[in-house]
Each structure stands twice: as C-alpha cells, then as structure tokens.
Image 1 (tube, rainbow, N blue to C red):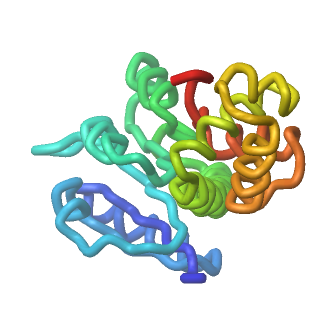
Image 2 (cartoon, one colour):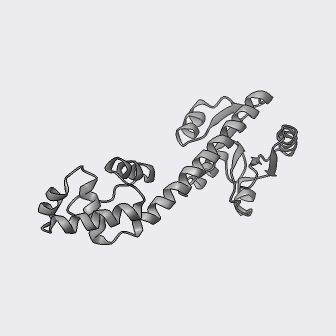
Image 3 (cartoon, rainbow, N blue to C red):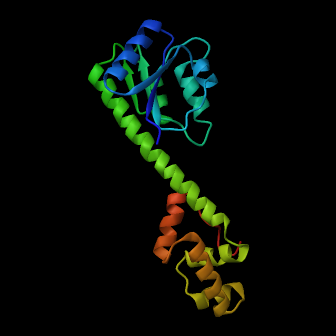
Length: 208
C-alpha cells in the first residue's frame, strides 16, 4: 500500500512551509498547495491520506473545496484551520464530515493528533470501500432468479414458503438458493444479512 500523505492547502506561504516542516519532522509525508484549485488540478493519488485545509482562501475557500470533494462517493478526511473562532463555519464543516476544526496559531500536538486520527480513519474507510465494492461485484453475478430468491431468503422465510410466494417448486428454490449463496460467498442467512449491511444496500424488495 502507498505511504499516507498529508496534503496541506493554505494560501499563506509562510504558514504552508511551517506546517509542511512540522508534518515531515513527525515522520509523515507531506505535499503542499497554495490554493484549492491547485490541489484540484493536481494528480489524484490512490493511497491513504488526509487534508489540512485553511478556511479562508481567495477564489475557492476551504469549505467550498470540501463541498466539491464530497460530491464524489469518497471524500478524504479533512482538518480545517482558521484564524478565527468561526462557530457556524466549524459546525457546517464538521457536519459535512470534517475530522476537526482548529484555530490558528494551531497547537502542534493537537494538529499532529488530528492528522494521525485522520490517517487511521482514511485507511479504515478505504478498506471498507474496497470490501463494499467486492460485495457489489459478487451481487452482480446473481441471475435475476437467484437475486429474487435471495431477497426472500434474507427475510428468513423457509424454502417451501419462498416456493409458494414465487410459484415454483421447493427443489428449484433450493437450487437457486445454493447457487446464490455460493456466488455471494456466504453460508447462512445471518451471513447474507451482514453482507448486505456491509455493502450498504438491499438486494431488492421481495416480489419486485
């Protein structure tokens, strides 16, 4: 896996250099940008990371960049830095998923703690995302009939009850159920429920 990177975005060159030195002195990789647009124009990295982001910047503010990044399915953890104790902005950015909102001049230990928590969160989030994508790929392998049977299985119904609902034989239900379980790589109803919960989806509404 790629080494985590801390992306520092601040239009104040002196602050940017100081933050970059601090992060690197703590043994972490850091890349800095003078504006939100420079960051957006940069090459996307596939590995884990977090963003240390100034609130007030020309052209595009920190919260505006957060909003832009969160349009995607996945948003890297963000730590906001502000020269002012802006409570409404802090509340809004935290509501949108920011890890922390720190006031400048920022305390060194507070910032490094927030960065480490953010990097840990990003590693965990990426692992969950990878697992979710894998589950969705398995679900795509189901035939329409297998998928329909599995939607009834997940409700806890017995094979004979599913057969009656679908108007097919119990033996046919068993065949579709067995193939579906095999494709989804689960061996119980509880496992099927957990699988769907991890993916954050429902197979479908029964009978549809």
